[in-house]
Image 1 (cartoon, rainbow, N blue to C red):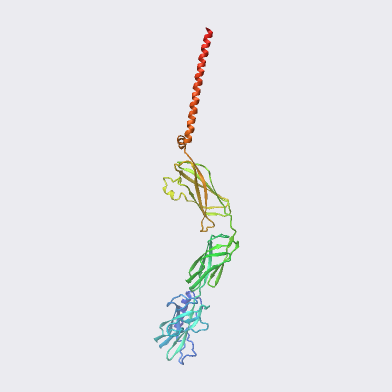
Image 2 (image 1 turned 60 degrees about the horizontal axis):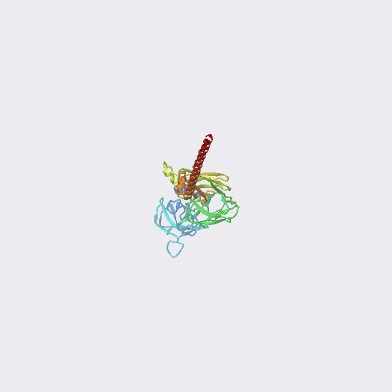
Amino acid sequence: MISGIIIFSIAMLAIASSGMASPVQVAGMAVQNAAADPGVENNAMVVTSVSWYTHNSTELPAPGSNGIPLYVTFVSYITVTDANISLNLSAYKSPFSYTYISGPDSDVRTYNTIPEIVPGYSYTVMQLVNISKDSTYQYYDENLTYRNSTISGNATLTIPVGSPQVGLISYVTNPPVIYQNEKFIKLTAYTENTGTSAMRDVNVNISSNDYKIVSPEEYLIAYYPDGDLLNFTFYINADNVTGNAPIYMHIDNDTYALDTFIHGDGNQGLSISVLKKPLVSDTKKQIMIFYLNDTGNKTYLDVQVHMLSPSIISIHISSSNPLGALTANNITFAQIKPGNSITVTYIVDTSNIPSGNYTVELLVEYHFNNTEETFNKVYTYKQKIIPTMEQQIENTFVDPLYAGLTAIAIIIIISIAAVAVHTRKKAKNNETVDKKKHENKKD
């Protein structure tokens, strides 16, 4: 008798170590059954272990589980021949029912017939059991019934039932700072099942008066194991409101409030300008400078700048670093804070082209508040390109306008020269005449 109680106590302690903190039930004492046959044996059998799913398993089913194998191991102190062993699930407020096995009834017990039960040996029986969804306790006392043609009796056993506890741990939004009318906000909620059993068919959804739920409408989780963590992601749009904006997360029948705040829409302003300096045609390593200034009250994050220019203007790539071409047109800044500005400098080469004004675009991409949505702004202006000195001299002789002006200049020069020669010749003749007159007067 003493050894049977010790075996049962060890079994219950093993179950307690798996997560069921409960006082050890003094069991194994045969219960007098008023309806039993006259030959009743007290203290004849002791239940040593109870487990679900498999023999010696520590996993527990949750309320609402159906058709779960229940294994019960017992030790007998008497010899019983042609023993009929069954689980008598009939305790007060019992949440258990039998799973249909065979026969016309939908509520059928399993009867295990053992030819001979020998004292001191362990025997295990199995019954498929349903657990009501309304089960509220973690432990239930039931009976293991044994009988043959001469004796009958009950051995008490304690059946553990798991209790899933899925709850919210924390949550984050991306962006962390939310403005009114902001779109595609990513809400991630972190949950954990801290209970003693898995939770089945879990429904998770959110609702709010200040956000529109974009996707998904809900999550349906067929099996949420105990001890596991699950994350749920929703995309939402903020309404045109400001202030406290709670979001309610529903996990089956439990509701959790997620506190958020919607800020007034910040004033965004990104001004872009260029240092207006002409480029020289067919010349390498020239400088183009742009200025980006945050004139609003929102911070621009992950700023990327790309110059979209005609093929006649190209970013200069050093021959010592040819791989620089891969990143030369992707200038990145971590952020531009309100009131601050940054300078973007490009070193460019120009082709041998005629002078003129050519369209250049500067593409600026950025984020707000670490949001995944990318915004952009395009700055367009006319870049002036002037000819080199050699090109200017060459144009002088090639361009019809320049050629005509040159011809006129030559004619003017020749005319001036001719007048000068004629004037000098006339002056010389006058000087000769005057000299002769002077000589005649002397004579």
